[in-house]
Amino acid sequence: MLLKDFYTIINIQDSPDSYAIQVELNAKHDVYKGHFPEQPVVPGVCIMQLIKECVEGIKKQTLLYSQILSCKFISVVNPTADNIIEIALTLADEKDGCIKIQADILQKGQQTAKLKATLRIA
Image (cartoon, rainbow, N blue to C red; front, top):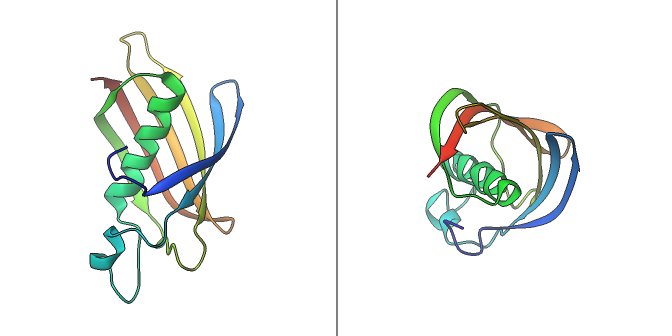
């Protein structure tokens, strides 16, 4: 975990190659003191790291991003408004050992971010 105590995985539901992951954000984490003190927002890079760490937990491997195909932040994730987010995650193993991922981040049922990327073993 890159940021200690930044989040806790509450639940993972899986079906072949897709996962619904419920995550509780620590709204009192120090990262929000600088991003931003009066209006905390989860930094986009932290969302990307969280997704990668979820895939690492599923695959039980240390991974690195090798390609970001698309990444869009649709709206801010405010951990004080609701500290629960959901990650809808689809994985596809490639012949070269890489993993293609597609992730949608939702807060209160609304999509806040989406990511298509490739991860490789570190």
